[in-house]
Length: 244
Image (cartoon, rainbow, N blue to C red):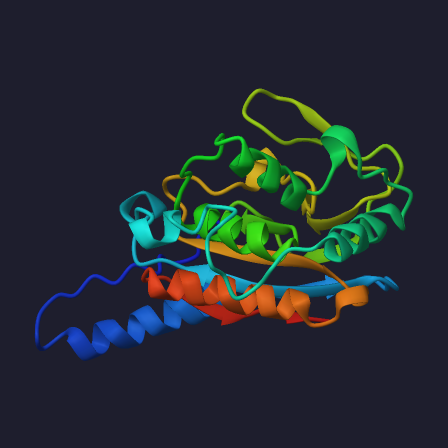
């Protein structure tokens, strides 16, 4: 959000280190103190967390060990399955949306893209997301928190809901689709996230939403935990986000 302090750490000198650490921690807590309101949904089992980087995203390249996990054959603590794929489609279908063709869940797109060798590195936060989603089979959304307007909520989009999802100006019809929305409207879902709140080179904080199903209760939390482990190993900070 405009006016929020940066979470970058800028050490000054031995005398100022303690004061600087306190200021950084206060800024970090402010930027990460998010809450997402959940509308009632019988199939949703969601997990949310926030990410904070010391400096802009462009200064945090994805390490080789992380990129090596962008392979269908890579060893991972989670394994995608046909049951998870079907449950995810049922989750998105519940509100009337048809998760097929170009509107299929992002996790299915990843499997195809990686299998065809068409998925390259984007940035640290997105690459770790793709790794976690690829192997778990669960779709994940990422929103730059400075580009989103509070409050945040998750619910089924109304008929006629559309938004731009890429730099080319293409739109998705999100009617009946579970979406994360901010004060300006839908900004993310399990299919395509909005262009206006996507991460970019200058991103320092982000909100992550893992779109799990009650048919595989706990899988969203497991996926989020692994995603956070990957980010923290790469030097990022993560924190729980309250959902109510």
